[in-house]
Image 1 (tube, rainbow, N blue to C red):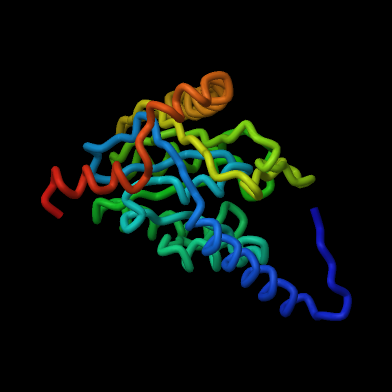
Image 2: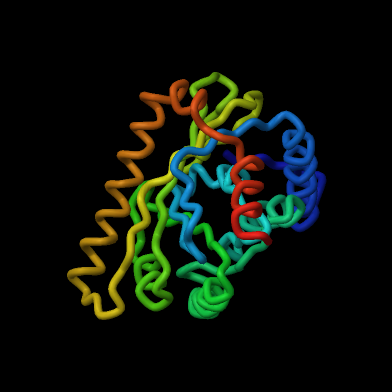
Length: 240
């Protein structure tokens, strides 16, 4: 979906949209209620894998102070980065097209420090819901697992935009649920065939998680814990 304000130059438009997204998220955080299922509490760093259309879900990931998001250097990415950083989420800028090598090195450094990194594995331009192998290669080099996750709300306020990925935004809903998959590890001697098999496994797992969450949303929502509750539990258990 493209929005044009012809009386403003492009640079001003993107800055304005970034500000509006930032304001919207700061308002929503006071009404936002995300329940989390199967969050991996005992990992010292991981790679969260999510669809490009579900990237708003990073706000529901616990331990936000440890979270970094890989965001492209495009102008659209600038809007998303502005919103993420305003909410205390750190960013790594780059994609396969621009700054990919530097971004990969930065991600490896972030993971070494015990932090988590969220990656939209079919972005920035698709094809939709086809996992690129970059996340598998980073998992191989870092030794950190890939954790697929889905994020959903069944209400009409959970809108889909007319973009290549059918970007989802929780415009008028506050009850959301995030479902994590089991950690997927990649051996440091994995060859191209093994990398392709794991890439396919991540893709199939994400599709399965999304369907499972959509079919069982209210059960998971009733039984899940909030992002803040899980973060507090982890801090109490680790003494940090």
